[in-house]
Image (cartoon, rainbow over all chains, first blue to last red; front, side, top):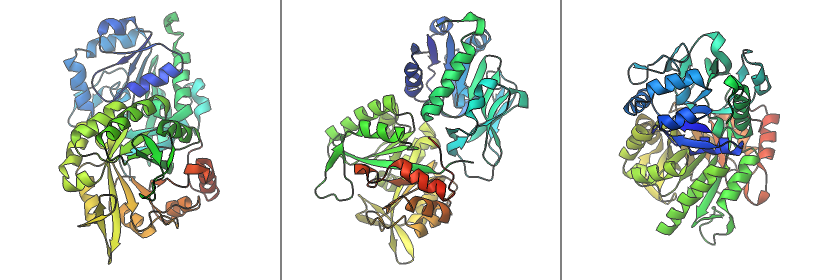
Length: 205
Length: 252
């Protein structure tokens, strides 16, 4: 069972639909017990970094999520990816989950913000399985971006500056764009994430 | 680089897609969920539903349509038409819409933009503006383009941006239905006044009208309704013409 973390930040139904379409069993939950039983943890999210941190803290989920990320494959999507980093600077400074070194700040670009629309992936050679997605378009909606080291970058996108699009630290992954809204390419990306991580610790759904 | 978006718009009345150009003698074209799904498979970068229902039952039906669409369409979709309150916004987002468009109600009560943006984020707050040329300016029109508010359209889009709109859906009342191309002057004036994405709408009669607006202005997306319906042209044909003319578009 794949667990999608429900912490009140945005609609998660379409994320669930995308995994259902791939044939997985999916549950949307904020129960630590259920999260512990899951094979994979998906952290979605739309909204501001600070508001998300508050929602997570209110539900006492920060520590359980950190622990779960050490045990099983973990995917943050959009704001959920930003929360994987150590610090966020949206509406003041707040602590993220600290699963990947780096922080989150406003995109410094001469282009208009938010960065809305279909942008192309530039594969950064750190993960062979993602090579096939070179130049593929995926759907972004964001104003803030991660700032991290090159070795955590699987893919980036050019928006007048280099925007991390897919990040990875072991079996913790993040996607800044919305795979669930990126057509067939998005579903294929989720499939590769699942294929890449299902072998972690021999986990089976 | 970010791709220019091609967006089919579906006018929905009481749960059915209707031909939206003439309000007299509306003709039913089909099921909105099936049509949205087909457009997304055909390469549409986004879908917009415009609810022109006259009844509360029609509005309720729209919520069901949004739920079904969210289960079957894997590109972003926006719902507009008849959005009056923050609760309307909430209901459509909860049903699965990615963005909600507000038009007349935002003009009457600009606070609606602020509230939507503060509560749900700029990314899902789309302000739809119907503009008509009056002398050397453009006025904001409401009630389906029939009522002149006297408000300067350029000032209004600036205020919408300031209040937290994430996108402007700009329809030219002058070119809408004429099929002679987008309103380039209006689109350029609006795009140059704000720092948020603008979607141009009104006037498409053939695929070539898309590359025209993309090359002459910095608009982010183009919307059309009638040319995609009844299979006059496909989304793919529009994209082929854009590509041939050097416009950066998404290969689906």
